[in-house]
Length: 361
Ligand SMILES: *Cc1c(COP(=O)(O)O)cnc(C)c1O
Image (tube, rainbow, N blue to C red; front, top):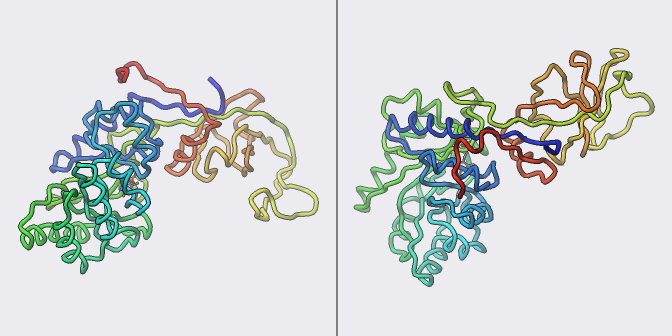
């Protein structure tokens, strides 16, 4: 297999999906599979569907189209609030979208009417993280307008926390979403079937809550693919945290000084780096770089230390590992590094346990 590569264990993906479904299902919460970190890869998306996921969500229509063209049987949700310039594609290619702008909802409505379809919408509520969302004081006005729009169907409300502002989806925030649900239902005599409380950062709230109120839906990416909650990145018991492994090859292994020598200016990243002088050390260079990964987001599985990187090289401290030219090094990846790695055309993807858990599409 061509290096560098990412090994992807399909059995472990299937396991994590099933576990999360059972866990959240125990308190009446359904999970949506978020596919943006895998770029809408149809084969991985299919594992989610085969293990009980009914709705797949992505922030990019391109990824949704990839999955639809591959024949993945699911409902598709657009996660990023639609751009005005996108409404035609949103209506044509997705079933559900998350919304916060009335003008966009009006255009979705027109477009859906023209195309003789009904597009489902969730209204996103701002609860303090300050990315997308309608201010709670505006909800009445917007719901009233949306209920008058033909071609779109208001199926629920939702919120997104812990993304921009790092605000915890705690009991207080979830209670606010629950009570808003009930209040809107009573005021407008409607039923909101989906109350989508958040993402992988909602795990701690979920575990601590006896009663999850009206929250009956979460949109999960990181928990499925990395097996962790997203507030402190603690592993979720019973899940695999090593579905993905990055493998890179050693292209130089030498004993050199530990401190660069000569006159110091900026390096490839525009920084003036500082290194301690510990005399001679064993160093190795790997054939992978910032084009492929976020260097701060990779953790070696061997006893080496990443010293730095440029576009196409990673330099490591080889004092303890004794790596030679041609050897390979394995790394765990965090969400950002995984996102970059799976979208790098220079990294090949190697599937493990493929046949055990997928049928051909
Ligand atoms: C990315 C995203 C998610 C999934 O977040 P994870 O932390 O990966 O579970 C959920 N909702 C929205 C709106 C998103 O953009």
